[in-house]
Image 1 (cartoon, rainbow, N blue to C red):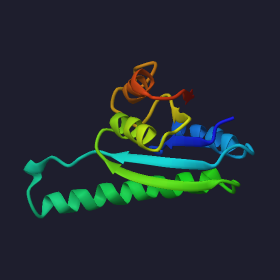
Image 2 (tube, rainbow, N blue to C red):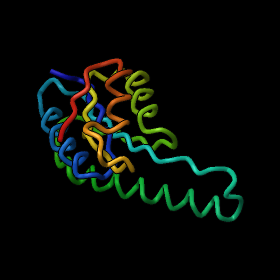
Image 3 (cartoon, helix red, strand yellow):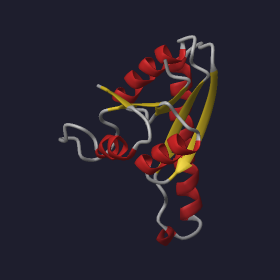
Length: 140
């Protein structure tokens, strides 16, 4: 079915459900790799030192924790797992990785941890669907 699966993770409940779906896709005999992408916000340069480095370290630790939780939720799969931690816009990071790594499908949750809780579909999901180079599977 899909050889190269890209999973967008942010630690939200929707993303954890997407993780289960991506893991099932990765158990298909045709799957060759599952790539997990965690994007974290950039720190504004006006923070200054040492505050900027403290904020960068904190965001990196949060991203690593999300990645670890996601890897644990994937469990055992027969294909390779690759991971990427990327600073910047989540939608841009997901689209860039999908283009660069020639992903066949992107799996992601419909809502993330963003601030606009009232929307039916998250802004990151909308951007990815609009600009993705491959099919996008959005889970709830």
